[in-house]
Image (cartoon, rainbow, N blue to C red):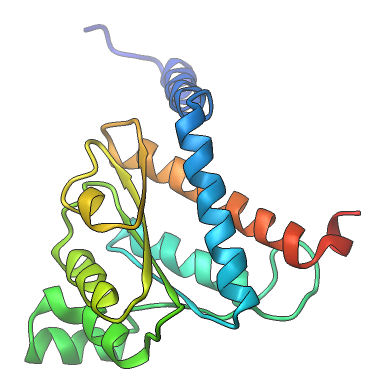
Length: 199
């Protein structure tokens, strides 16, 4: 395979990303699942519920970004919406030391989650053990679960109440769609709860 120049590599990366985006949005079943995600969050906030999120590595960063856009500000000033990204540093080191890394999210869900809340888990493989345990704990407490996944969906595909699987094989392309899903679900929630912001 011939070595790409830097401009060629940039073009190839954007073209590949465009193909993944097109494959995703042109599938009506994907848009239907995304719409279900929006409706679930809207209903959760109408009932004064909380949205939790979790993931590992880049997915953890996306989980934090998701929560801060809900509690902070997305486009315009509005009241904060209840959200928390699981896995603050002191909790992670305490729990992983005492119980094992696979328990870092489930312990927080067991302590903080209530029936009527929602847990959003991000995993490009769908096989992250700590996210799987969190989903199992959420199920036991009557907490709805949404999984943002990639590849074949892994184990989380069968555990989640709603699984959205990005049709890509590499973590970077999968996470790029995950962040678009995150931004769009926040926008749709705001359009419903704060329609004056989109007049």
